[in-house]
Amino acid sequence: MNKTDSIYSLQHQDAACRARTGVIQLPHGPVRTPAFMPVGTNATVKAMTKDGLEEIGFDIILANTYHLYLRPGVDVLKAAGGLHGFSGWKGNFLTDSGGYQVFSLSQFRKITNDGVKFRSHIDGSSHFLTPESVVALQTAFNSDIQMQLDVCTGFGTTWKKAKEALVITTDWAKRAMNAWKNAGDEYQGKLFPIVQGNFFEDLRKESVESVIDLDPPGIAIGGLSVGEPANVYSDFLASTSALLPPEKPRYVMGIGTPDYILEAVYNGIDIFDCVLPTRNARNGSLFTRDGQISIKKERYASDFGPIDPECGCKVCREYSRSYLRHLYKNDEILSSMLATWHNLAFLHGMMGEIRTAIEEDRFPAYRKSFLGRFFGNKE
Image 1 (cartoon, rainbow, N blue to C red):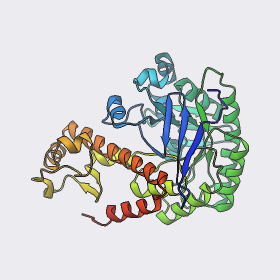
Image 2: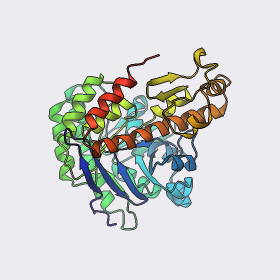
Image 3: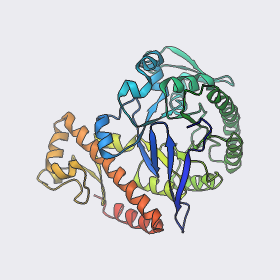
Image 4: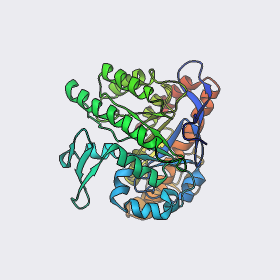
């Protein structure tokens, strides 16, 4: 695979909406889309082994450049043979550039045209990242998909501030693409620039046009799910995705609940990630067809049925709600492990159903049915 080869092949688009199935060809194997990516910030999905992820069926997970740069550091990862050699994960890695982490540490950072200066959340040490150095880090990690360094702005930002951030992000995207193209043919990972523009239609359109001009392997939509109301998320997801070229894979960052996933798929998004399914699992919140349940509740103390009778995952086959509640109430490590396995398996199974529904031109009906049941039986 050459660095500039097309990586996306469309399989089918639903007759009634923009939902589509396809395949993204990456250095560590193909990824069937739409696909949910579990978040493994520190090169590990919390409470899961790589073998468990493989058994469920995932072929791509996410890791974070900011965290891995700080610890264990690029030298360790490079010596280990990149993220794959370090972790033993044989599938694909997408690495986030760290832009969002820098955004969330606003009191500890300063953004300039050259790059971003920030203080480590670990020890307070000072660091400076540029678009080029972030590409170099992710290249050393041997990331299968790497992201540009960008400036993320929150909901409620003024047009002027959003424009200033977009100007920097646009310049950084050009610099990142140049650095990626010069990274050497031995590195086959792909760079995705990020569409920003906050919640302003004109800035979003401007950002999309500048990203398209770069002719990248794929495109990410950033700056969503940053505190905005659900209807604003839906409107800007729809309007932004409608501007993207169909031949490129599309990635929306930070999406991981069934309603947001289904909204993204409806609008033609191919891949997405979020910490919520695994974080919620560790806090005792589990997915079922009839909505999320809180396993800590007394009502499950003598419930010897599975989490979800319709889920075929090994946790639902082998463990009861009663036992899972017992583990949670006693702070057993196994509680997080089993709950995480189930939530990820639930989403992975849901993605398979989504792809089938799209192939059969019935995705809108599937979406309506799934959400009607998921939100129709609240505890």
